[in-house]
Image (cartoon, rainbow, N blue to C red):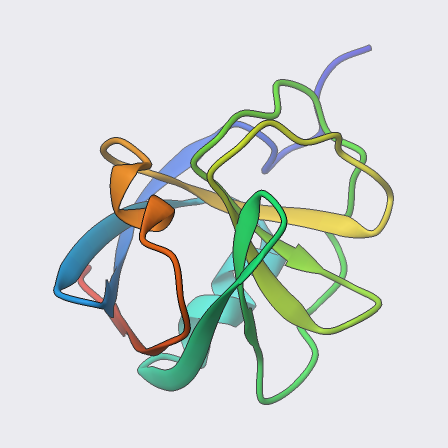
Length: 127
């Protein structure tokens, strides 16, 4: 089965997550859901731990065009969890489901996401 458009195709659109003295850059994928996310930026949210991910609740629901399941999941994936309307930034292994939309992927390592706690989060568009 061929991956659907947007699952793995990166764009030149970059966003920055700023929290707890960290500055993490993410490259967004080429899908309507990621473009919808980018259209909301900048955002000021709260980032907290939930299992093997950091989560932040969005001010509104995103376009659901690129919903999973999708192949090649990996730590560093930025996803949107449909039932709760939150970002899920995975720092551990996970399984893709129909309830996830992959928005992008971290440009470096996931080490900053391992910083435990709840933090103010600023998300800005870089390009």
